[in-house]
Length: 408
Image (cartoon, rainbow, N blue to C red; front, side):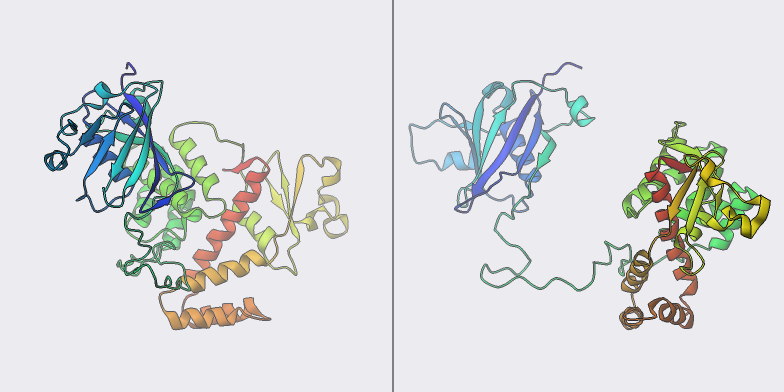
């Protein structure tokens, strides 16, 4: 389509007697039929104003003012002949390269500099739609509250309230205001994947909470894609969206891989049939018995260093030194990630007393043993196993992605 819309950059310079720096801004697509009133409403929405009862005005470079009709009726200067913003068209009043001013709230005087770009735009190209009113398509900066309030009861003199000790439950996917769905039964999920049963897999993941098991659940996504139905593709898209929202290590890589499969595109890295569970166990398992893992970059086979020792396995030993580029070595991950998993699991529990007991258990020596015993005693073992396994799989996937490998 032809580029017939104005592109207008609007920067908030300041208000309430203070100048802002750096100036927050938004860039708007403004159509030929849009009025200054529609533009003012779009600016106020984009700049996070919640009280829309105040008057506003535009001033052009030649001094022409464009005002609200109610304000115009109260002007004391009879010489001034401002234009009515409810009928004046933006595209007729300004040209590419022009600058003009917008002021909202004639008491607090929130002042904006508006700059018309020298190049016009196609709204469908920059917005994806052809809106009925001006609409922002780019932006930057933090928007101040129009009354300067930083919290609901801010009187301008009191100190801000102290932040909560724990992350908000909505940010950690543990919102207490919602009725929590039962946790997904991973036995059903694994059974359906093992048997290649798309119907059973779909039934297992539809309804229960899968957010702590996304790395594990995603292993069954190919079953849904094989059905090639719209509903099953939508389920895969839901898993992708949840992975992107959760954002744990390895989640972005898995989301990208699933999206590529959904679109019938090639994966971003080298696809190998890696046993991710075994790989995760070898690089995060018992520190006494697990040193790390070798990966055959040709076959995808994963094996411990013991299998390279002729003394231990005789002629079956794998000669990794003969082809170091083929056999990749992954050092075991330290215990810090596992400790962080325990801490996050404890902090997310809705039972404050139980949460504190678990946090107390991981302070000092013997943290892993103490935590494991308490999780078992409080019947949280299944929930913890799902949570911790998913974190380990994600970190394992991240380690492989760092080497350009995508497990399939």
